[in-house]
Length: 385
Image (spheres, one colour):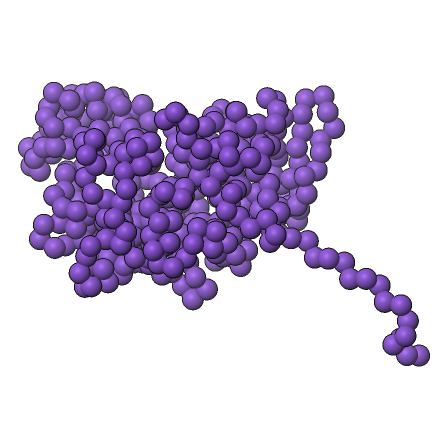
């Protein structure tokens, strides 16, 4: 019998992919993560995606937050906190741990848990430990939920500056002189550890940069011009990480380059140059985010220099097995050689941050950049790949 004239059932509209934007976290970069999330929430295409903002408080509680990006900016030189955006002081969000289900549940004490629907992809805009370092990525792998950015290994390598440099060196990328002081070494014999640093300064000269080995956004970093400032710098770095890194100062220009994963593989943006900030000893947290020291985009490099730094940025991306996005930071030394300083697997992502600015100059707007990252995550599966 022909069905040509029978009434047809209306087609059910397909559900938009739901993107959980996860931000905040337990690291010292909590505030700038909230700022980044505000920019992403403002830019993401709401006609294309459903969005679920989830903030992680400084003590690790996963909170359902207001979808109000206008409240997530820097005000009076102060970064915002997840606690100020949470819909409840006690309620918590729970991601699934069963790969067969992507249902997110919200619960409050004394109330029946409420299903928030399935999440198709997580956009983790966390910076620093407990989020950018592979810990959250491992949780999402166990849950079977796709996510934006690098996997467990690349995220961990990108967070730990010591092992990042070891990986780069093994792939033939040039890094500057550095020294690592591990917490056990410091605990067993502070004097011997300090002598190692002084000997390092004797070999490579002052100033030195004393850094937490596993932190970002230039937090906890001190430029030390002589021996008198060393102990204070060590204490400041250890406040953020018991493992510290000592780097020799490199004379040269600071050059950054963005890498973005396309369907056919990673590509590099036009590079940018970070000029020495007038009011700061170096490009520290306040210069980056509070005073918004502008970078030069594109960097005034020769055609050959531009091609070389773009090539090296993609090489660093591949060396660490990165996915999605990376910002690669270099020094162009006085003898014309590029030395890689570090990569950032989830770089600052506010509209004034260098990564979006470099892609804007390369022809990809901020909203398009967000969309490309979400689409790349949706194309990938979790698990070994």
